[in-house]
Length: 502
Ligand code: SF4
Image 1 (cartoon, protein in one colour):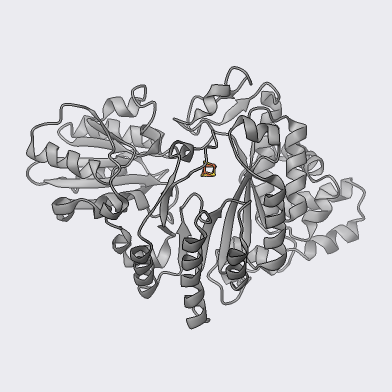
Image 2 (tube, rainbow, N blue to C red):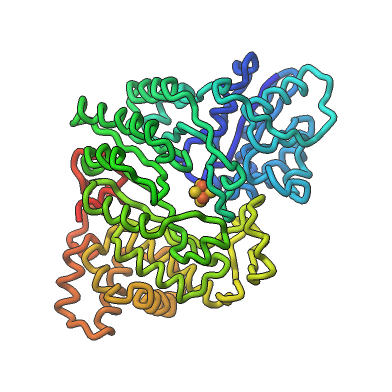
């Protein structure tokens, strides 16, 4: 008998935390359980062949797939092929993408069993039933949420290879008490913490094994200030004890809650050690009310400003375009407001209709039209027609290439001027007309195009060259990517490090 846990990650660097939780909680079946991760884009036949090479010589083989919005289409192909070439294999699905609106999904129809919601306890129970009988009668098994203390933490399952080469996801709590209607965490209605001392021991052991890059998946890291402070102190102690061997930690923050005690701890971190992902999503109070997002905009703006002025943290702030009730003017105002706060990165996302999220209640009233295929991106609303939405999609892509990349740090303020949204939209429209592409634009070509645009706006050619030459993009001779060390002594990912040196 063999149990294979598998998923297709978005990138090799993303080690699946969900699969490791399942493996850690298999109890007496843990020895018989193996983990096999793939990366999207891999050939279906290769994945199926590799999985089958681990099939049990005797007895039952169960394959459990973690299904997410980014891998559902490719996983469906893998499941279909597995069922054709080895129909005796028992396939169990789990993960957020198949936890809601499941019956209508082709992948669910192809599989033998489905675990919705939390799988830590329910997946091993289901495996026991499949292996020992009596055969489970139901196809769908609603995940039981155990007391947090009953969940075995999975961090010892990160291999030496994972520690050396991949992002290590960790979580001090699950769930979120807020109810933003576009977000799956809105269904949790509360957050559940893991026992902090145990969790810190796990972090300690990961650090002792060489882990230096930690990404917290907690939806709201700063909810419980006492807990947040202890976690920050853990990293501060490490930084103090080993200044030449630093750590980098990433947290998601709610922006309007930053008490002084947290601010004090944050200011003690050196550059290149701390990153905050901050969801603003919209600055429009009417839109916020419509999607049940509670946010004190003034406080949020004040905290972002404070973080930029008084801390070394790298700030990645999220905005969403296409929310119900938002028109292009109000989105532009929010964007300009956020640019004025000067966070290092603005993640300009386009609304997606995640399965199970309550946002669909606005579909009729606000003319929401979503792509029926993953990732279910919004195509139009009653206020933003399809053609304009496409312009926003391209804006987001070019914004990533030019602004978030950190490669045009000195040129960007000139491009944005006094009306960042309008000016960048004009550049975005022009770039698309010129290239007919939003991907595969080499950096040299992009730098040339940006220069051409500035000259078209009336800037003197010499001044354009001087400006671009102060940036990464314009510098010659080119330094190979792997030789660039923008922030010596930091383990911050390169893009973040680029932002912090400007
Ligand atoms: S968007 Fe953030 S704050 Fe809102 S429900 Fe989701 S995780 Fe919670």
